[in-house]
Amino acid sequence: MIGLNRPKGINIKNNIELNSLRQSGKMLNSVKEIIKKNIAAGITTKELDYIAEKEILDLGGKPGFKGLYGFPGTICSSFNEEIVHGIPSNRKIKDGDIISIDCGVIYEDFNTDSAFTLGIGNLPVKTSKLIETTLNSLHLGIKEAVPNNHIGDIGHAVESYSTNNGFSVVKEYVGHGIGKNLHEDPQIPNYGIKSSGPKIIEGMALAIEPMLIEGDEQTIIDNDGWTVKTKDGSMSAHFEDTIIITNSGNEIIT
Image (cartoon, rainbow, N blue to C red; front, side, top):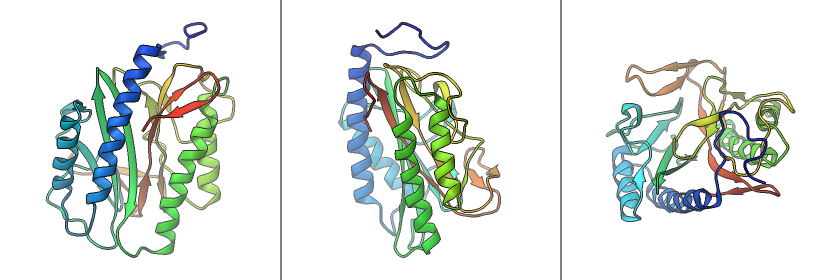
């Protein structure tokens, strides 16, 4: 029964709240698809930001990021060595870039959050493998997000797969619970020990988001105060989905 043995500090959602989350996720999926259709060499990330915001508003939602903590955009758009929190600008996407887009939607006061990385044109083999490995690590992390497992099982799956494939995981920035607030407990690191951390139970909503780096795991923040970059200048990729924990497993809603 939902509500029994509730983890401390973690908001367990009821069926009405879960349905609002599902609708928010449905909107976010539509936004991601229209962004993907428009990503190409020559477009600016500010143009993508406008497209995303228009789609969210047309669907009856609200941008989840714009104004949060003072962030100026509807999307985060991060190029190449930029990991997360890149500010949309007049910078044009060009062949050889990889671009990570992170976006959030609010519907009926409930947030969803999702990210993806795309390569433009021809990429080095290692960079293509980075993107593929990051996406696969997300799937493996989600596979561990089931009742009676622990948050540490998610991070362990992500880290083990990623490091075995020759990449570093970002440790300073993590996934998170999600609901009426974009960032809720528990924190979900992309590393961990099996059977450690809070127990996963039905009714949780989680945003799982592996961030991998070709080189060293160390990060820096750009002069804009937002954009997180790899310290050694190596490429980075980022994928994220919001999921709901069900009685028999999980449901990906973004």
